[in-house]
Image (cartoon, rainbow, N blue to C red; front, side):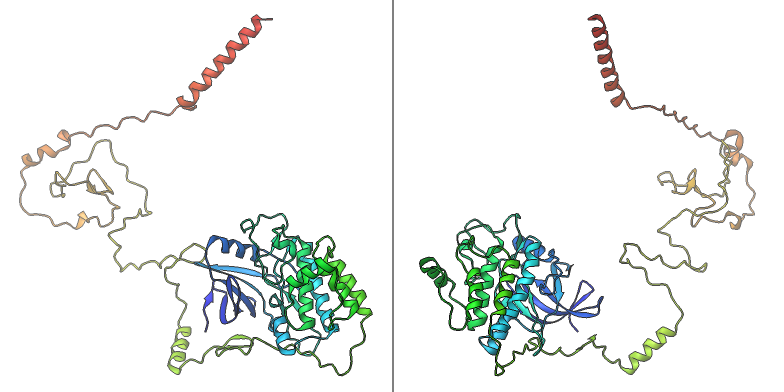
Length: 458
């Protein structure tokens, strides 16, 4: 079994690694399904802020793979997203090399569709490349891509997390204005989309620097041998070095692509179908399609568990619960002596009414030593009738010896010393304290003087 994160996500096996975190296949115990979990590896403030920005992005689109939920556990944080098992466009190129133009147009249309939704949210991706475009494992069916990894994306107008003259992204997919330190904008993402399209058509990474220099020196070049002319006109509009001459929106580029697809020649019957394989692999031992597998219990353990279930219900042990409350211990039986360290007040009959003068103290009553402190729950220093552990004087042994009345004359009621009367509590008069009343009176006097002066001026 894998590590359970935040009591919900059980990490199964690593399936990838990014710039700031590792991607795991994880089992969501709440939703009962497998997800992809990106676990933060670094804990510095800069990386954590990027991580928070990425997990805060919520975009619902069939061709966008945005974070769905997040969790934190001690010093670790992660966010989850749908599990996409077909690998990336780099895996597809590694399996087949250059792809047919119509297949590329289908992928390009899905990419521009998802990117238009991202831009509609005011977000610039800033890192569009084949490794960040994932594929569902659809086999030979209709392909389905997902734009992922929004780790360095940002909304237009947000403060940048990089220093001045510092470019963030992947070399080889920068737009020319990014290299000059311009603020991130939507046309920069479209330039990267044009480079990705060339990568799919030629089967290798294009030389962006040489392409930009040729555009600047000679204008739009002719179509490469592997790119049909109608499709090249769309790609040239994405690859213009000047952002003002480039497509301004993904929606506009998508419309131009739809018109170009109609002019493409029909694909031949000899073309090999492109199959998108499952790149993640089988589940490790201990996991199945429906989640973690329950290991069979030994006979002795199963018998002990059955006996425990047959026992009557017992209150749970004293422990803090998840909601911040705690379970009280069961009440003790009468046979158990009360603890001496805790002396709670007991509910009982009304308190005894004591006379203003103390009653005579019997000779046999235990008297406190001169230096002893009075009992905390006694009256006059002797244990009271409701004190915990008070002796029962009715069970005290009596002595048969004759007592001299003169010996107890000093303790009779006629000569019993009186307790000093408690000083009466002075009632508190209602009203503000002197610290509040004095400033108010001073302000009132000033207002009165100003009023008199104003009347004399009329």
